[in-house]
Image (tube, rainbow, N blue to C red; front, side):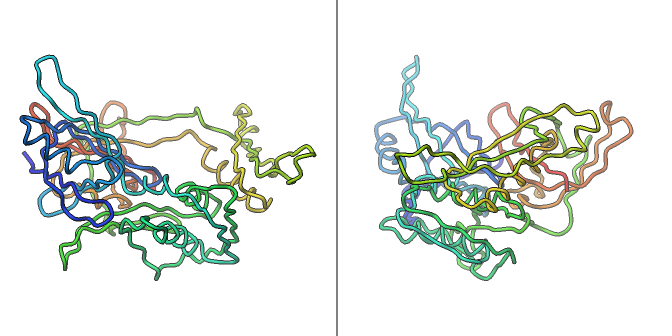
Length: 365
């Protein structure tokens, strides 16, 4: 059974508060969305109860997961729920989210403007703004040396009360945008726990040689969902209202109506899609959003999931890395041999009656 350690620390200083046992743990991390953790702390006596009360304070406690010498996950405890079962056993259920969830709680209280700045610089400025507010620095590092080569104009008005996470997602989600996440790792030289804004254009990449995954083999199970519920071949986005005079009717600016006419010619039904960007006042920016949204929606979403053994190759460092997947079974009777990129990871530590495993979420390379 692999040894996991659960370290609880002060969010702002990263001072270690306690190492506590956590049972029934699952945790995940992704590119493009917030990762989550859930688990339960058993409370055997009053002494343990006091330790939990001191170390686990929702909203100000960080949780780190170590596996061996490596950091596998880091985030913020947002909820804790003490309870007792019908046998009188006390436990505390906790839920946490990766450090990027902090930016859902940071609002731009000042107007920020960028004119022909690299989109990476704009992203770093948003993160820096949050860190410069009183109490806002939770130690997320940025790397100012990297550039995407794509210049943007952006204005974030203080009157819109935009959250930093929303601003980052909208900035990254336009045509010719980028990917971002908060990466956690242990500094090899100092042993320090590190949380870092990771930026990738056009995508986040990790590693060079692809990891080989095979079924039958080191892949235990797989699933191959194909979801067309959000599919669209015609798209229009709504932006900000076109005037500030409350005495007059206000109408949102509308993007160009974008479509894939070849889809309709090839027999697809018309599938309309729309999106709202109520702080976007420029038509060219709104069109960039609309085209990017349509490009993401033009085909059914296919995100293969494979459950693999944790054999030393499969670690959280795989997020963004290439894998080569080979499957031969009844469904793939002629065999599948294709390249993918890991865009998410869901880990279940070994528990009584359950083998340690990781589910990898894949995207076609």
